[in-house]
Image 1 (cartoon, one colour):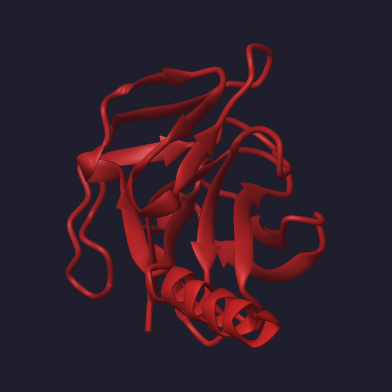
Image 2: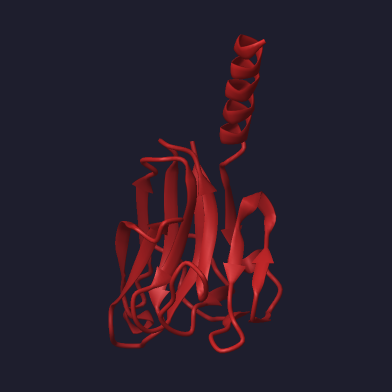
Amino acid sequence: MKKCMAVLAGFLFFMGAAFAEGYVNANDLEVGSFTGKVELEDGFAIYGSAEKPITVDNTEIPPAPDGEVFTKRINTKGAGNTSYRCVSFPVTAGEKVTVYAFSGNKTDTRTLIIANENGEQVTTMDCPPYGSGIMAINSFKATASGTLYAYSKSGGINIYCIKVEK
C-alpha cells in the first residue's frame, strides 16, 4: 500500500510539474487598478493592496527587440514584495522564464527582483528607462519548483509579459 501511495504521489507531482508552463501578457488583461490578489490563467496572479495598488493600463511603446508588440502594461506603481505590487507565477525546476519590462521612469534604470515564496532573491533584472526605447528581455532557468514573484526593488516598473516554458 505504501508503495502504491508513493507511486501515486510521484505521478501527481509529475503531472503538476508538467502543467507549470504558461504566461501572462499585459495585452490580454483588463485595464484597471487592483487592490487585492487577482488570479489569472496558468497559475499567474497579480497582487495589489488598498494602499499600494497595481494597475493594468494602455501604453504606447516601440516594439521589443525581438519584435513583440505591447499595447498594455502591468504597472507596479512603486516598490513591492511578495505580498503586493507583484506578479506571481508557478515554475518547475529547469523551466525557462522570460520577462519583458521597462523602468517606469523616463531616465532611470530600475531593478526587478524575482524572489521565491520565502522572499529569497532568485535573480534580478535591470530594467532600462522607457525613454531609452529599448525594452529589457531577460531569461533565466528556474532552479527549483514553486512559486516565484516579480516586483520592483524601488520605484515603478512596467511588466509587459512573463513566459514560463520548457
